[in-house]
Image (tube, rainbow, N blue to C red):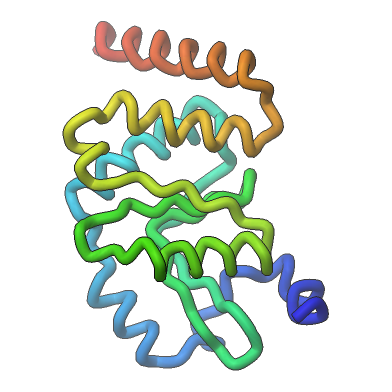
Length: 163
């Protein structure tokens, strides 16, 4: 596995020609974001605009292992290397833990999980959880994270008051 990791470290997201047709069809069929995923997407767009992250892609396909086990993730941030999963009722904690471990062990990708219910019922808390995870992965101290979160909300509030 070590050689696989070394050779594919820079190419986590594979070209579509490398991915089996069944996986591509599944991705296209499930390409539409849920309302909760759209909320998280808007938050991540804010993070890009405020220069907290470089960019983010949705529903990316990550190949694990030589044989071709594939994982489709909700959101993938390249810098810092983070996957964000929005968990609905169909998610299995045991299966999710295996996926998270594989992503972290093979590629050093941290997985942040947020539940649909948390995003819908307490959006501010869910945003702060994700923001804290992103900022800490960038190497910020807890104090710096708190300061950046406060700045995020000040900027967000000031945008509401402008046209």
